[in-house]
Length: 239
Image (cartoon, rainbow, N blue to C red; front, top):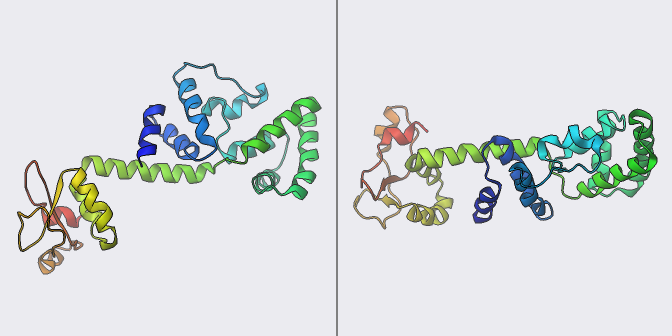
């Protein structure tokens, strides 16, 4: 989306961790942290941790809570929760389950005091931080999957542009949306009756010929305005 492109520019993504963070942050609420993340990444803003005990957990995200897994690690490493208890805390806070929170908060405070030797005041401060964070915290395992998919798609679109759109345009329901995108990318669509007609949209590939070669059959032929060369059936079929 245009907004995601804009945020990629702000963040100056140059590694996969940045993509994961952006997938998680580019939503209402946490979006305000994108400029902070970017400045801290570039060394333009000092990295500050809410409390020093959180540094090992938040170091990779420049002192910012981003992932639900960070909340859970705070509960296990600082308050001594089991993984099951940490997940219950995550669910209770994110769903604002007051009854469960009233049970788990005293246990969290007590755990911070006994396991990490924190003061009650600091333990409450940490709990307040993760309680606020849970309103927007994202599941990192989901973010990794979304970021990997987005990266792969971007790679195909950038390096195998015609093949990429040929595969997508095989789904006729996407024709209107992707037809406009193809025009923007200066990719023409042709039909079998008039292969030079850039405005014609759909044509049928010679299915028997393609299937004899063991290729998947697609419904579109494509060419770029630069070379006006129709894409080879075999190139489409191996996707």
